[in-house]
Length: 277
Image (tube, rainbow, N blue to C red):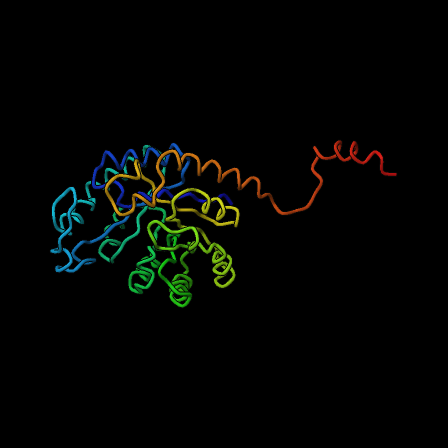
């Protein structure tokens, strides 16, 4: 089974549909399988006090100004949906609240995503699992007990899922990657395990591919110096265009694990062993 590659656009579109479409184009050109967004009901996710708080951004001086600017509406998502269809690429989103999950039901997305921050939201987990769509569950910020509760919900609802090993720092230090957790999750929960990365560079993602992950998710951007909290932990076009093809090569190189003499080795063996009686 080929590694499913998710290009996380998230909020790196900065509320600009032109940038959003350029990121979708980048994902298609690089050979990604899907693009992913984030959906929030601002009034549900954030308190009034927080929204009134100060934050300088290109859109104003409050947290509200910034959050509202980054949130696409129904018309925007209809445009995204149509554009992805013309580009023949799947899109889906991680909902940060139940209202947002209801919003996403307006679209016939093939997949769901549980963001690391939402893994402990039992009501949201039940709501997503009831849809019976294959769900990617990120495990950053969470204990094994937290993960087990989520897994049990998806198993009880008979909803297809896979876990994604994740460290939720932006950007993540390579020393914090702890990729052996992929084996821990796979062994404990008897399910496919992917990798959702927030590091700079490509090395950790290459290593995750070699460990047999079922999916890889990386944030993408047009320029890592752009405004936004996720931009620095994202892949710019050259990185993404290198990562996906190289991961496909790693998949081929991993083989099937069966020890055999390949056909091209036979004449070499004959030549190199001629002196052996």
